[in-house]
Image (cartoon, rainbow, N blue to C red; front, side, top):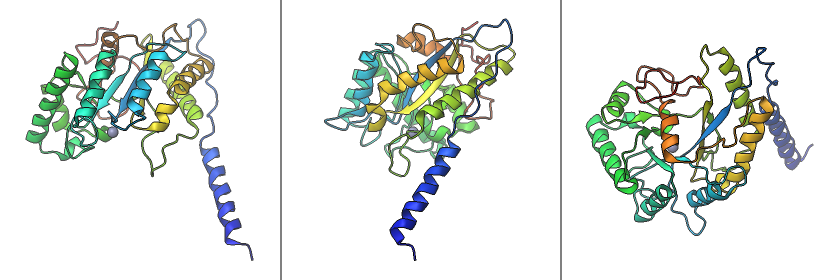
Length: 300
Ligand SMILES: [Zn+2]
């Protein structure tokens, strides 16, 4: 009779083999149409669920510091979707200080959750309450940053006609991501296994979509989603930047001198061209073409 320990090890190996096979890189992209240069790609880095108020190691600030000093593009700026009233984050004086620091460093702040109950689906908040809380969040971020927030990324990406109409009424634009780093807290495990192959596969999908679009945007603006409250993400931020640029180059994209954004204004303008129009039914989209329905998108 086999020992229980051996059986546990065997089942672990089988599980690992399954994970590896399901995470294998999909085939490399086919050659692009003749005579068309490879598309230029640039990245909007976005972070959800912060700010962190953990001490002494603060993941949000650790990410901010790596964006400032990394060797891929020092001084890169990002978009942080914050939980403005979270009792262990943005709702505390410490959390608001972290948000102030991010804004002072030139990063953009957007709205994620607005409830003191934390990460609450906006569809499950009564509309009158949601409107009041969104307005409070706008006031808070205006006080912190000196300008009105323009982006909202609702928890879980959940939306319906009521929440979308409300965002529009308040001048908020819903911005989701093309590539999710899968670094949310899943089953209490914070590491992101197979992150390189996952990002590569997502970039290959974007490559294929770009050729199918009748009017592919140039440069392609691809939105990444991380979670700045995750210490694993924070400890590997510079590595993630390398993975993004390396894998995009391997897939065939042209990498500009500055693949990330240098300032909040350029970040805002690029983001506005990728917002989800009111009538769209899909929540996450890898359609890279600019959104013609957004009047604030000034891209060609
Ligand atoms: Zn979230």
